[in-house]
Length: 594
Image (cartoon, helix red, strand yellow):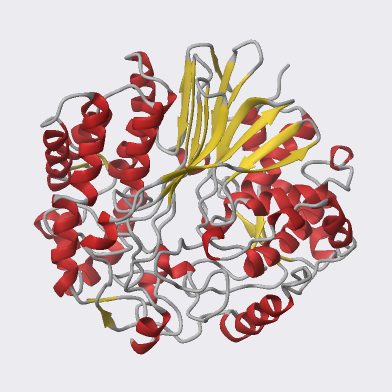
């Protein structure tokens, strides 16, 4: 008898799509059915997720993708993480009375990157037109989609705040004055019109590539940028600091930026090579964790036992401590990634993993970076404790911070996409009048202290938590995977990957297995809190394992069954067989394929 899983591992040879919402996965599959490739399917899926999961991503958000193109035979990263605007200086923000950048509102906005990232993917790797990839999203925005219960709850929780402080959001999310009920049919006609206008401007020129470029221009140098610029010139809105602030983003910022294609950061682990974003994202923490864990016999450990959890958590604590000190936009300073992934560095760091839970944040000290380590640790001791730096009067907003979505696609030719779009949530920022979408709040990941890799500076990319994964088996692109979850993204992907590599379970069984994560290190989101020694584990691990973790000194919170993790994954075998799986948690992610 094969092991019971919550759903079958999807198998086929034509194509597989897996995402955090069943409608989006079905749309991606429909694109493959029409002859599109994995890139076309990912783009269409991404735009649909902006409609059906508006509390998790939106058109004003950001998007990193790791892709494998059969045509070029290369694994590459698409960086659609917009940088800070020209007016986003530490001096300006501190003059506004801020010690931390709020988690919402207009000051937390960077250049919206997602749209250009999707268009770049379509232009360079896709085959379809702007119309073909946007039409499914337009359909759901115009004709409606069933509201997820969490979307309904989020809107209801913000109803009074929207009415009082963000009237444009109230108009969009509470049409007629009331929040949509769970599973009711919800429309966003203004957003549909925005996309229709982009299509009409694209189709004013001939040729697919020219049309994609015209769509990019309409967004970044045309009517969309103008609408954002006009709104931000006068808008002054309440945010989580408890004060009203104006934004600093302008049409000029948008006009002068575009998404980029770059090389991934990789690490070899047994027969696998894992590709992640460079250190402008948190991706290398998964690679650092693997580098540390390489020295332990994880295959001999019970994948649901205390030894496995303890070693993985302690390795992650060390990797995330280094994230705090060393990661940031590589265009603004030297990131010592090679050292951080080297065996000599990790052999020393590995000695810190002892029998008991560590309560300290312990970054490594790389020669030449001593001052940076000291400055970061001094700042963290001042700013990130349990609870916030100052009690925000808008705490209810902070509690409703958004999350993220994820998409994995593999087509019959072997093209692969792993992408984690986010930002521009309905709760992040007010709706821009006339566009039907909100801006993002990614700037909250910057610090308002000089001299750090993550210090706020114009043109700098915030250290995003978005971290898709693509893994090669014996040099062959094989596995695309990822999850929403902020700081938890790599923490949920790591045990999934380790179980898959060491224990031979199929994708669905590896995703179904109980999950855990730590909040030991400072969070990337406002108000940047940390809980030393804390881990959250699903109840499915059982009482004996949980008791053993507590004996080792871990501060354990037990989460209900099926509540931790949002993973999806897809695989292509050497013989062309395709596989896909999606988490049953939240009961909305779905894998499809044939």
